[in-house]
Length: 610
Image (tube, rainbow, N blue to C red):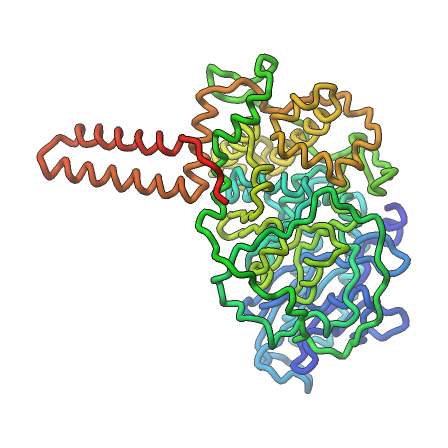
């Protein structure tokens, strides 16, 4: 990291444009990406051949402007991921002061992007957005002096010290994430700990990448030091192997199915690297072709109950919780039904860092960040259509990826979980994985605690995310405590009892992941200062039943149907009561009775849907 700081964080300033014949291509780079080439060279190294498609996202013509965060693999001789931030804009060609001969369309689409050694996404985007606006306002894209000045300015103003403060999370609102996904944030958190294949889907790209990176920001140290090995993949031998657009089915076809699971075993680990492929044909245009083997939708029908696993059926939890000695779990106030307030320290300022002996990452005294994004587990905040083959690459053991093209969403068999950001819905097809992700009672308390603190402060000073309790840093500190407590519990002699509060199925699967094996293989003396056990462990009370019932009603298809039926029954009873001359009070009594019946039916244990 020291050498990177001495060299300056910014590698290149790049302009990518859309050519009416050649497609997406690099039009300018400073310093030149290829040493010795001119600033206007569109030649790229093999490892970065997807750069134009990442910087100028698919469907960009539907938006006047957008922002993209993306990762590039290291070049030969380098070991670290390259972080990209791109600001896209389009404008009418007729307003240009200088219109070049190859501009034949009515609109001009270009992106200005920064390639950096450091994951300072929000900081870079804030500066880059202003410069991109000024660059377009010139109405003459040959005026590149402003871009050279941007390169010099960023290398002067940005440094490795920016990784140590909360400014690295600029633009990543943990509060908004909790408000939108509520308890499901914890499910996403656990999915990543299990190193599953996770695909985020939404448009525009800015919302996509910010949501994905905000989830990652909940993991202590992941963004700062845990992504260095997250983009080690090899592109295909030539772009022509990637897509065959003539054979792709219409992206408007939504009648696609749940497929049979095609999930990599969680104990699978890639120890080696694969060979560098041959040089591509750089003359291929943007509308390249794909291997349609991976683009054929699977037969079947999408069940309405696909996400109903989130109901967290009581009988499943009974099986888990029956194994826990509740006489030792006394940190839950059964009288008030409220958890003891947890106020961990801020996650910023991690202290001294050292290179992990096994992970190779910069680790703190607790062994964090966890080595999730290593050994073929990729992080791709935005994935271009030309990278689709990576979803089924045998050298990729898993990924957290973002996509805006519906073709990715349709290929359900290539992901373990698909996160529909718009609807805050997590689609999981494997019943065994669903079972691993059932939230325990302690987990539900933790999630409920977060949601209550965030929603109660929704209309006050915490709107800007700068407050403590209920603010962005507070939320990240809570997840930091969750991870520290989980790790500390795993070290204890009675770890099975302590880990049961995190979910027996979950912890059993987590213990055979790469990140756990790397962490447990080293000693971390500082963990002795961490209290083991779930932060919200404790005896069970009526309050837990209320939380589970509320959770089930709000977040399952069945619960929503019951809720609607209750409301409909209540209205019908009131109207009927008025019609026959009964008092409104009597009618409401009948309605309450009907509602109680519905709730009793809902509370009855049932098996999770297939």
